[in-house]
Length: 558
Ligand code: ARG
Image (cartoon, rainbow, N blue to C red; front, side):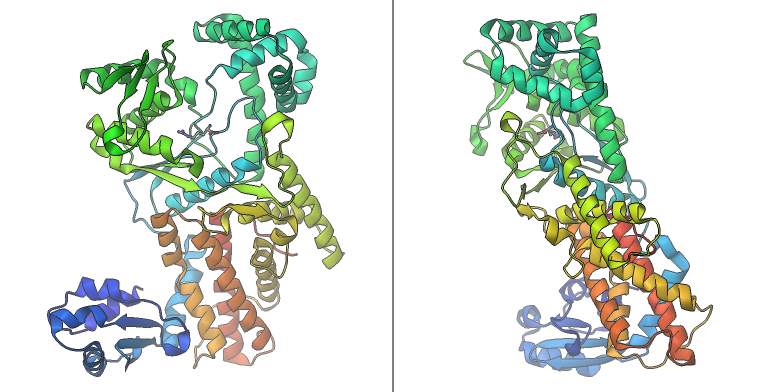
């Protein structure tokens, strides 16, 4: 239930609309003050009274009932206290009934959200730098679907450019079919790196020629290119599977080859295209930006040209409500530029394009550089996390069955959570020890809490019925935290910020653990035991739903 709405509907404050009250209601800094607080400062002007007087009169006139048991004025705030037994009944019943659907809604029904994420580059390493876009984009994909939207996951492959000419050239000179077949993306990357350090002037020339051959549809060049592409995709799909990531479309840059000309024609018709030093540009000086390059002087298209075509294609194909681009903040300017160009073309939907920018990921030892082969492959980071997880689990619980399976969930979860826990725009330093700590604010901690709750339920079962008497503060905190889940999911979608769900999970886990250690569950008496089992089961469901939205598996035992 929406308590804010309930409270707002019952408040009488002269000249202040209900929705204004609604949006002013906030959560107090600590729960001893109440569960919701209404600051009255901004009503002072309209009501011509001091905030203290307004708060007092609102509190005095507020009709307490079974839902809100108390309204109290303190220094210009009205603090409302929710009846925890009623909240517990409503929350637990809802969670037990809805299970894996708890927190979902149909608010997005009929709306499509395109999400461009991961967007790997063919024949280039899938490295730690791709972790955030993959983890954040995938979480948003799941969150939007959970809220009833139709999410379309798009992997805008980097499969266009002169580097493929270089690659073919390198392969022709030094490559061996079997070796490449065996080594896959690593072998391809080696060839590419070798080209960049050893290619002669003549080979550079050949490479340009090969690129031209790909462009003009030459069979051999295209076969090679498609082979490299397949090898890359086979490889990344394996990683996506481990990370619980999926896509609905792999339409990459090359897909737009024949869709750029109409855009260029339209730009020209609308008088937006200008010539500058032989190149075709859209002048963005009036908007304080460098020009957006559309065609190079040799007639070649650019990254932005393909993004323009892609945005138009997506609008025509999916009629999106929003189109998100989960791409590092280094590309801020690129997105600002091409969004602006679409706006200048008169596409009113340009306002629905959102660059969901995120910060850099580096490893503790500073290794990140993609130059000269010194790359940290995401695959290796995952493998190392899983291996470490295996060690930790075996030590903690030598008897555990399915250790490998649990280690996979814990290790992969730690990689994903490591990328998701902080507000997305922050640069993060990935630390194996930190993401795998049982004590910290980690997925492992949340997973371990789930296993703990699960074992309680296994022993005690979930009661068909339960009675609620006055709640202890530890119980009330868990109830409140569970009831906050739907709002956390909505906020995460609204702010494009999966970290809200990640933090939510840690918060609920902490509260559950406090309850678990302070209150007996299995050895409690009659009604209390039933209630606590029901509460445990509801907490477990909320935790599982949160982790699932992030793409993190939940082992039953740990
Ligand atoms: N492949 C690009 C890169 O690695 C990211 C593409 C992002 N999506 C887009 N529509 N521009 O930088």
